[in-house]
Image 1 (cartoon, rainbow, N blue to C red):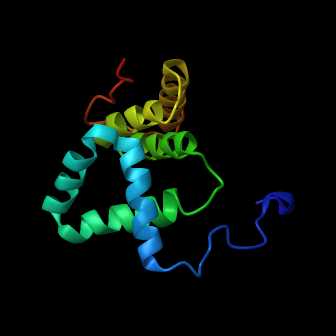
Image 2: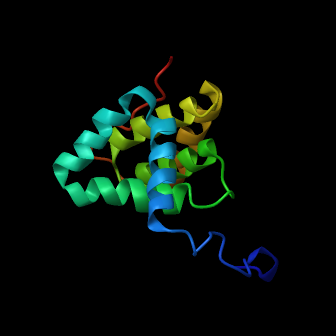
Length: 137
């Protein structure tokens, strides 16, 4: 990492109480998933209750929403790229929709998907499932 790009301090407030991460996580989760938030949360909780808690508190509260570095749309785009690389098509579709919910244009979301696919292909990722396209509103 070039010296001028290195962080010199932690980007998140490490003194926040866990309940604050719970609150922020639920807020971001609901902002991203909107009317499907309860259904998606139900899937996570049914798979394993700790998974539901972990996704909301650690994933959305601490990781994705734990700083003011990225916007909701930028976080969604980073998540899409990671999910494309690990062949998680259902979640790719969710997070492409989440980017749109956050204000990304159809063209921006499609460009991020295309770039993530191209990069993944260049490094040898092969998908078992088709990677979903951005759903039109």
